[in-house]
Length: 225
Image (cartoon, rainbow, N blue to C red; front, side):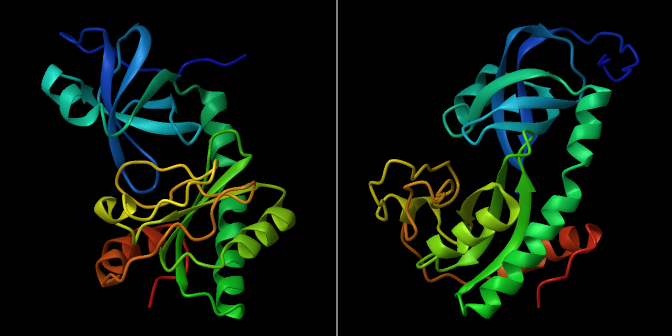
């Protein structure tokens, strides 16, 4: 039976139905709404229903009207519940698979001469969908994603962090599975009819390597060169 993680009472904390929550490896921030008011303090880990699926997030603060106006349109979804002990255990079990997909993705991209760098891999909470974050050109990646899907029995989605939001408006492939989220490119292109080349941008990717190196080293992954 799942039990909520113990949370010591905090005087003056009130229940709210909207919170600012960070989520995803890229640190996206949005305002998420609960079906009913919840008493959540800063740092509480929660389950979120986002455009990508069920994700783990971390509460930053209750949402003000101004925050809701600024963030609600760019990143929103439902705040499902606070994480339970069982939820945390299930989430921790994803790490070996994430590492395996990461290592295979980098090796296969180099082998096939693809003009991209795999930066990180994140399994969504259900353990069925893997998000591969990369920078570079995303042309000719459909076979690459299919091979990973077959190897790991996962749905593979590619997020090209090198495509700015402004450029994405001019690179729309008009295919049914080509989903986008604010802040970056063709973010949910999978092999089930989605796009393999939602456009690419000529960008200086050094800025991506700098702040991601520390995160990858902390996860015992090969740092970017």
